[in-house]
Image 1 (cartoon, rainbow, N blue to C red):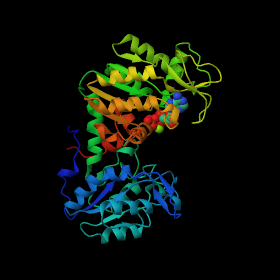
Image 2 (image 1 turned 45 degrees about the horizontal axis):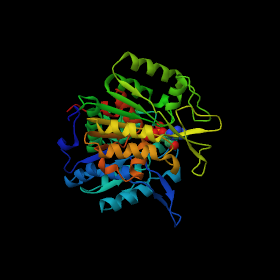
Image 3 (image 1 turned 60 degrees about the vertical axis):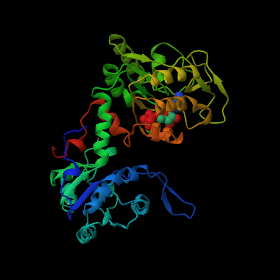
Image 4 (image 1 turned 135 degrees about the vertical axis):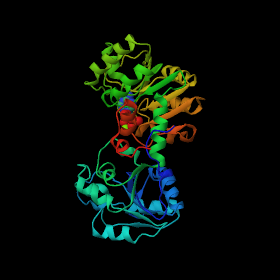
Length: 400
Ligand code: ADP
Ligand code: MG
C-alpha cells in the first residue's frame, strides 16, 4: 500500500552519494575474546534491502545511525565499530567506519567513496545537536550527500538532525523498511479484515493508553494481559496483592472500561492468573481461582483458562495486532501465557502484526517470528503510528 511519500525505488541514485539514516541501535556485549560484539543483529538485517538496493544500482552509500544514549559526547563504548564489522559480514563487502559524525575526516571519506562502496558514520548522538535537531547539524549531514533516504523506522517518532533536519536540505525519500513498516502497521487500522483483535500487554497502561483508546474505537475485541491488567482489576475493585501495579494507570483503566461500555468493542480481561511469591524463575508458583491476588503473591502471567480464551479469539480473527507480553515471559514458569498467545498469532490465518520490543523478543524466543505477517522493528514509533500520531521522520520526506 502506498503511503504518499517518495520511495528510494524511484530515486535516481546511480553514481550518487546517498545518505541513509538507518536504525542500527542494536544491543552490544563483550564477547569471549573481550571484544564488543552485536548480540542481536535483527535491525542491521532489516536495513539490508535498502542498502543492497542502493549498491545494486551503483550508489555511493553513506550510513548514519545512533547507538545507545551517549548524550552529545563521544563515548568510546558506544562506537559504531562493532556494527560496521557485523554489517560487513552480512553484506559480504567492506564497510569503512568514519572516525566522527560530520567533521572533516568524515567529509573526506564521504568524498572519496566510489560507486558500490559503503561508509558508516560514527554514532550520530556523539553530536550534541542531534537530538536537539540543530539545523546546522542537519545541514552538515546534507553536505555529505546528494540524496537522503530515511530507513530508520525505530526513530521516526523523534525529530532529530539525522532524520528530520537533514531532510530540509536534500531530496528526501523513504527506504524499503520504513515504507513497509508504515504500510503494514497502517493496514491494521485501514479497512482491516474483521474481526480485528488487538492483544495488549506489557508493564504499564500509561505507555499504551493512546493505543488502547484508539483500538476501543476501531477494533472488535481488545484483549488485555501482562502487568497492565492490574490497574484494570483495581479499577474493578479487586485486590492485586504484591503484583506490579501502576497506580497512575488506574484512572486510565477506569476510563477505558467506560469507553468500551459506551461503544461496540469488547474489552476482555483475564479470568485467571499464574502467581509467584517474587519476580524470580525459582519462586513458588500457584494458580489463582479468579483474578483476586492475595497478599504475599504477585500475578506474573495470565492463567491457562485466559490464555486458551485469548488463543481462540485470535484464531478466529481476520486481523491481529499484538503488542506487549502476557506476563513475565523471561521467567520460565511465567512464559506459558505469552507462549500460547504467540502460537495463536503464528497459526492465525488472518493478517498478523506484532510490535513492541519485548513482544518481538518473545516471538523470537519461541522461534515463531517468521510465521507472523509483520514483525515491527520499532517500539515507540509503532505505538505512535498506531495511535494515529504523525511521525516526524515520515512527515519530513518528500511527497511521492
Ligand atoms: P513491549 O516492549 O512488548 O511493548 P513492555 O515493555 O510494555 O512490552 O513490557 C514488557 C515487560 O513487562 C517484560 O519485561 C515483562 O517481564 C513485564 N511484565 C509483563 N507482565 C508482567 C507481570 N504480570 N508482572 C511483572 N512484569 C510483567
Ligand atoms: Mg519493552
